Structure formats: C-alpha cells, structure tokens
Amino acid sequence: MTAERLTAREIKRGLSTAVIGVRVRCRQSVASTMDAARRLAEQGAPEGTVVLAERQTRGRGRFNREWVSPPGLNLTLSIVLRPQLERMRTLNMAASVALVDTIRAATGLDATVKWPNDVRVDRRKVAGILIEARTGAADGYAILGVGLNVNHDPTPSLTPPAEATSLAAATGRPVDRLAVLQAFLRALDAPDADAERLFQRWRGMLDTLGQRVRVAWGGDGATVAEGVAVDVTPEGDLVLRREDGSTVTLNAGEVTVIAGTSI
Image 1 (spheres, helix red, strand yellow):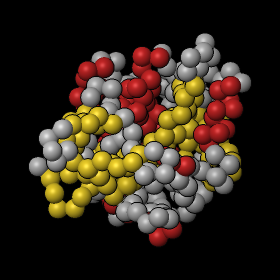
Image 2 (cartoon, rainbow, N blue to C red; image 1 turned 180 degrees about the vertical axis):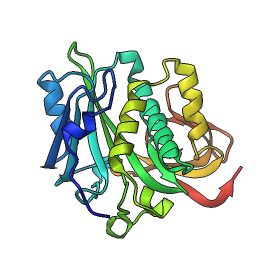
Image 3 (cartoon, rainbow, N blue to C red; image 1 turned 30 degrees about the horizontal axis):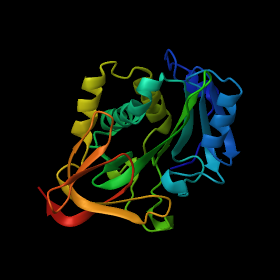
C-alpha cells in the first residue's frame, strides 16, 4: 500500500467531536509523540489536543521499549487529557474499549485486550497503549499514547522478538488509516460515563482471564509472580491466584501466558 501523510485538516474534516481532536498537530518526524504532547500540555494546551507523527526517532512503549513504525502506514499518536483525579485509573479502560470497538467496527476482527494495555488480534499484538500523567496540581494532565499497526506488521524488526500483526495482515487487505483514526477519536470522545458499565465492558474484552500467566514487573522485570489470572478489580488491577491458593493483586507488569494452560 502506498504510504500517504495525514494532515490536520483532513483529520478534523467531519470529525465532529466535542473534546478529542479540538486541536490536531501532525508532524513528519518527532523524537516521541508522548514528549511532544507533554510539552504542549505544560504550555497549557487544551484537553483533547492530538499529536500525530509519521515517524518517531525515539518512540517508546511500556518499559521504554522502542515502538517501530515506518512513515505513512500505521498510526502513532498522543493525546492531552485533563481528567479529574478519580477518573485517572479508568483512562486505560476507556482507551482500550474505544480501540477495540474501533477495530471491530472497521475490520470485523475480534480484537481483545491483553492485560494491562495491549490490544491483540488472534493473540498477536496489534496496538499498544501508554499513559503518563502528572497529578497533584491544578494544571495536572495525562498523556495517552497509542500505537496501532494498520498497514505494516513490525514483527521482523522487533527486539526482543514478539508476536505482532497489523490490521492489513489480519484482514488480507489494505485498511484506511484515516477512517480508523477518526473512528477511534470519536469513540474516545464519548466514553461510557457509567464507571461500572465501562469496567464490565473492559473486563469482557480481556483475553488474559482464566490463563496461567507469568507477570514480571519492576525496572528490570526481575520481580516475577506466576499463577492463574482469576479476575481484575474495578481499578484495573490484575488478581493472580498462586499455586498455594494465595492471591496477589498487581497494578502493572509484563504478562506472559504459559502455553497450554488455562481454566
């Protein structure tokens, strides 16, 4: 598929959102959309400001892993949000639900969520969500970063190796990334205001529950717990039941499913 650069004008044309996309900044190349959006937030940019880049020289996902995406084929963006403190923990749920809904509607693919914030198709990662926040101040903010593989599968270039895919690879046809982007921004603009209903929808999209998993956390991933992912809390934490019957609640970590085991 021919790579084409998106512009702020075409993104905003017909978007019709109340908050998300109130401003759109498109860049050919930035170090990181997260850093660019954070600078705008600190300069007073309004909630809903979107920063999209065709290329990142230092793009990152969770644990500062590099996010690989060639220009003009995928979607790499960050959004300035200014949520009330009590809604900060639900941002990941709202973004995950919006992204899954968008993929399902646009492609018919059965997208799911791998806890805490990877979106997958056929158990292969198609998108990642990253949230960085500054709280405790009147001018606090959160930056929501999204990387979505639309028309390029980065699997061959990933280090360390990982199972990934793209919407085009999964459907067998090119996918209109402008239409996908606009649909996602609209879905994020109107999240479910009922926190319990949002939680239940997000919970129902998780493909981690019932699986025997290994969860690593900490800066070097050296702290590890194994067990069955039995549930999640309304705050988004994972409840893990260990072999001895005890449970541990984790609010972050890298999940690896132990092959061939589920309940």
